[in-house]
Image (cartoon, rainbow, N blue to C red; front, side, top):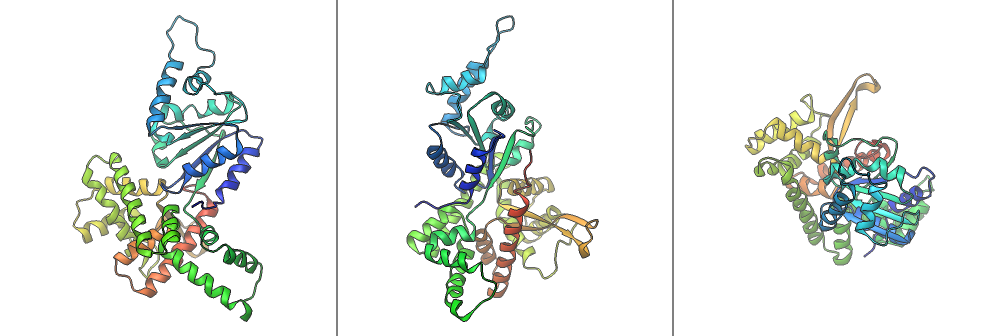
Length: 375
């Protein structure tokens, strides 16, 4: 099942820009970044080269890259080693604007990431790079390519995108209705149908695979099962970022602690930072020997990976009295619903917290993700 995504239009806009920058797509795992990018490339370029640095294609390209860039002092240096690397990898490669080169999971190689400036300036071909764990590029081995990268976020499905897949006719009515400023009796049926659709969206969220599962089966339990698989995949893939395999248990504990913070009546955190607040809750409520370093590491990974969003606080509209990271939200309502139900929240609290989280997600999208355009 193909789910129409708004990011496709952003890709078209980038292709038609005159800046000829490298496009970086960031965002959480399982948001269909790879699928959408490949679909866009197939439909808008004559030739596509796809390299995933986390898979075999990445290993093969690195062999080509090493061979093309090797040089013995005292001999003539290669004139175009990067061009040679892609020629070795794909004998049909032509450096033209009808060619697009996609490098997926680029965070797996600082060597390739640091070549982005050269990709942008030395090639006529277009480059798209993606990463599911962009926080890794803040390591010292990675050099920022300021000015030559256009960053675009990839989110889970918005309510509008979900509605289009769920009921195209209702989506059309919703679009027309959004132009009206007043609710009238003649539109009550539409509002009720929209409310029902939104309730479903609040429970399953917007991960494409979860949405597809629900649309194909109309079974909420199966959709939630797919969501649990996505959570387990993220946890398993995150093991390599921790020294102790047992530290990965912190994710579930943090998620549950975040829910406890969200359902509090008081706004913000009691401690000075979210990491301190979460560490206190995790240690007290789950009898876990989680260090502050591990807690900070987990929160950073969750934030940079697009799982969590951090929210600052301004007291009485005084911009000089700003406190960063005073509240934490999930970047997908399905995750919010799943973990809130595990805490035993009542229906009224559950509904109110989901709506608050929904507002945050939409405000976050207007300010950049996870922290705006970094380059």
